[in-house]
Length: 177
Image (cartoon, rainbow, N blue to C red; front, side):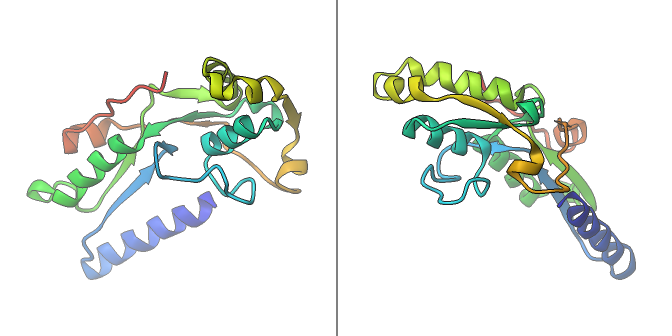
């Protein structure tokens, strides 16, 4: 997956250099917020981790942590992401031409295990979710069992956003916790 994204980056760069294609690349980092996924998504793994965990909590189902849930992700609220995208689209003085921007919030950096714990603790505070959250067991599984043989995951996915902030006069504002 990451190799295919990198290959596309290189193809766009080549068209830019050879044919003068104007482009801007952006890399969204774990966007969260309303309307992105459904807790009723039929296949596990086809929605974002927060939506998957919320679905399990609402239904009182086990949450499976792949390889211990030590993988860290930086979660970005969708409104912060859209603000950055709008600045790229506006592109004042063509500042974004030929650039790559990471759109993420490095301050919202949590392990998948920490995320499961935070979500369960929060759900237990709401009467409508407390009972189902109490039934949730956090289980561990291997990546081979969960995804299949040969799966490799990035352990830390934290965006470097200095150029996004400087060029676009943007910064994420929504805190996760």
